Length: 97
Image (cartoon, rainbow, N blue to C red; front, side):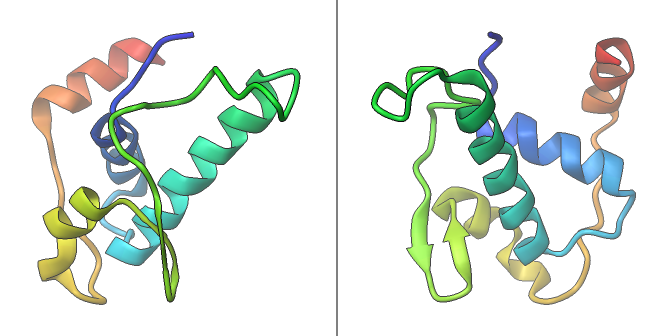
């Protein structure tokens, strides 16, 4: 399986979300994607070797799982939706689909 970074996963959701994703929603979407890959790609809960990304660890916060670096990157948006457009990632995404 191809390894991604947590930023790759977050960028994918932000491009697909078209400006309708808040920082809290982004954290949850990245967590769900990570959890689904763990669940569907590994045969045993004893050996969770296949992961979506390995460059960050989730922390348990009051409102759910959080990647601290991802939080820091978008914390300035507060409860507002993230205004985002990464032209180079958009081109890369078009070729992935």
